[in-house]
Amino acid sequence: MSLGLDWESSLCNDLGFGGLNRTGRSLVVTKHASLLDFERVAVIEGNHPVPGMGSVDAGNAALKFISQLMPDDLLVCLISGGGSALMTAPRIPLEDLQS
Image 1: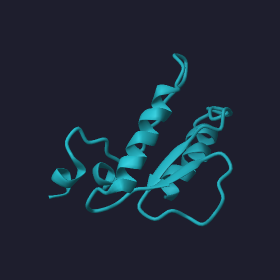
Image 2: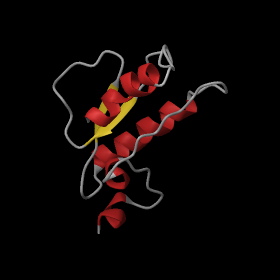
Image 3: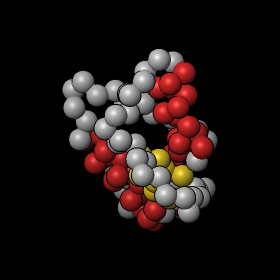
Image 4: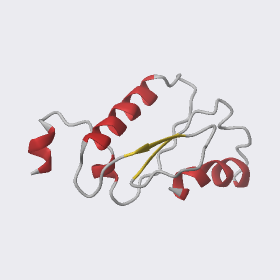
């Protein structure tokens, strides 16, 4: 989960994009949610290695998140192993996807 939580300091500060995340809108999808409270980051727990309802919830949250972007917004996506299971928006029944 640190990949998603470290993005702001790495990208914004180190690369000179200070204040890039000024709206406080960040979404992290992870296998194991942290008990820490991240005030500017929404953390959603998906399922891995087999997609489940948590993965569908994460996919729906991502769709909602991107639907709220404005034309001048910059979207940064950090995807590592397991991303296709952790976050999904299947067009087939979930049970078919799981088998």
